[in-house]
Length: 93
Ligand SMILES: [Zn+2]
Image (cartoon, rainbow, N blue to C red; front, side, top):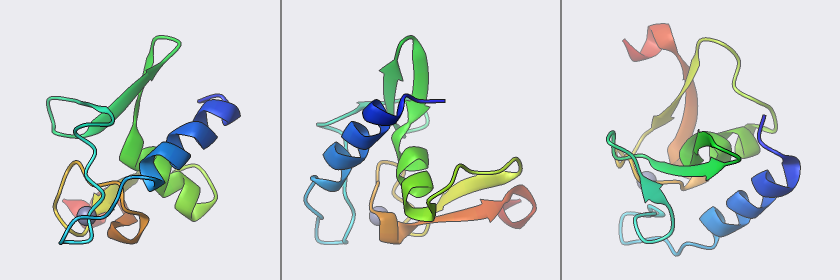
């Protein structure tokens, strides 16, 4: 699990990104972007995907096994909470 203070800092940073014309909060200049085009941070050697953390913050709980984040805007860099929803793996595939 990500330390709670780091979690809060990441959420603050993500939500401070201004929305673009599509309403997306794009993160390329704030976070590292992985090969899948998703924003990531490294904490004590562990990588965390930022959109996943923002979704957990929105839900107020961790994702349960089988749940995956889904970006309705299709923008892999986006961390706008209104664009993030949890889906089950079955719904996605
Ligand atoms: Zn978006």
